[in-house]
Length: 115
Length: 113
Image (cartoon, rainbow over all chains, first blue to last red; front, side, top):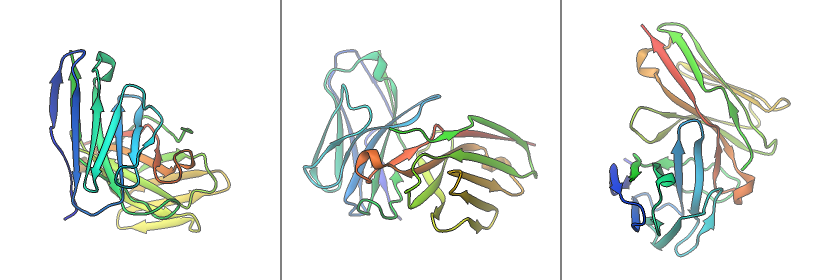
């Protein structure tokens, strides 16, 4: 069974803290993604990576960075957490290259609260 | 990113059909997807359609595609309470090099007994 796992289901942090969200996939997928999901706004792409050590900004990268040192692991970093980063964070992975069938497989999400 | 549009809420009675509509932006999208998100969970692919098709049926699910109007719909026959979830329409996103998907905001489906 294909699997994307995220390190925490729930996380509470304080403003200004550095926060790491980890995502691991066991499907040998090339592409990995980080989204945030907010009520009424749907899913918004933060960053994605199409290969080890490669990263591309998505639609809302400000305040975030990412790291992909190994193919199976994609980390989202909040350098200095702020209350407006309170959200549900979803990680996904996919196999295909651009333009083809590219079903994304999602993790269960991490609900982050920044106080 | 460009906007994929969906209505935000739909309520139906158990046993009725549900129709969730979506308009997408990129006429060159080769695949269009429907994802389902149950409460407290990530998204799961429900079905997809290739752009050279105008209809796809899979058990209780029927997907209709109107390329001219860039309109996609998902029909769920004999809707059950277990179908209550958020449904997302998605297209391949040209604004992210074609790797990412561009999602709508999601339609919350409530099925009442």
